[in-house]
View 1 (cartoon, rainbow, N blue to C red):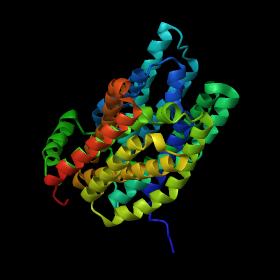
View 2 (cartoon, helix red, strand yellow; view 1 turned 90 degrees about the vertical axis):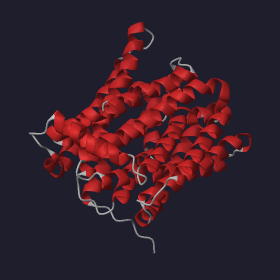
View 3 (cartoon, rainbow, N blue to C red; view 1 turned 45 degrees about the vertical axis):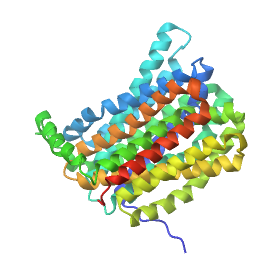
View 4 (cartoon, helix red, strand yellow; view 1 turned 180 degrees about the vertical axis):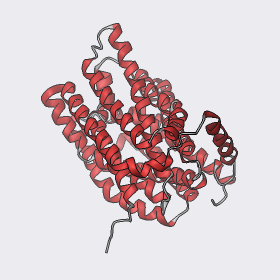
Length: 400
């Protein structure tokens, strides 16, 4: 008989906060590429817009990591969520047809990146600083939260867009994020309190990084990080262009895209529970390697089979690719968490740098090459690259 994987209270609370944050964001974010195209942005500019979100997320991470020594991480997480609310308000107020509006639009993407950095570094600090029973399992729960949000948020978002336009859906997002910020502070303030050290200085933070960076070069760590980063690059390709691939290459309507995203997310729920059980049994390095191979292989399949794809085949391929990415991301965070448990703030900053930087570079690179590669070649090249990195890294791979 199937039973739910174990979840600790701290993991449950962090996952619920992540779920609500993503629910508010995904009411509009899955339509964001379409929104950008409607606003007149070219395909390369779509990729650049994602760069403006994910690059500041990565660059601000060390600052957020230091702040976590001085301020309760639950407070900082709540402030990050408030940033999402301010972003939603900005999207309502901005008039993009003017030069000032265009500048404000791009500035708001940077604000969103900084807010996300504050949230993700702080919430990871809480998890990494807690004596977790199984780090890979806990982070798989945490990383699966966006998929739970995907099951409902796009439907709710589509309703508000059809009834009230994008102003309506941004207003809904604003309300959800304000509520989530309060919930985060109430639930996570006490377990996060022991991480605060009023006497901690910038020099102390610098020394912690000096202890961590040499360890990142070990054969048990570096190959894992290289594989994970390649998977994140591929995720950037899909974040920027998968929805547009469905619309332009496969000629799907907005209604069919909505149905696809909803069905995909519902099916990913039980799949993620099975993946959590799998992560309990294997070590982090093996999880990252296997997840990378799966993600790369099915990206190649998607590109090669594009002319013959049906709804069900796209669904199966994307489920498999997403499962591989989830396994890879969870394994990376689990590995970092276990190796650097005494420096959770710096470890969470490094982990947060990896995730958005990979997606940002992937979105930027895909924006540069999409004009002459097309969607099919983009996904094929991305998948081949991940597979080659996995096989190359395996040469120097040692069991953690």
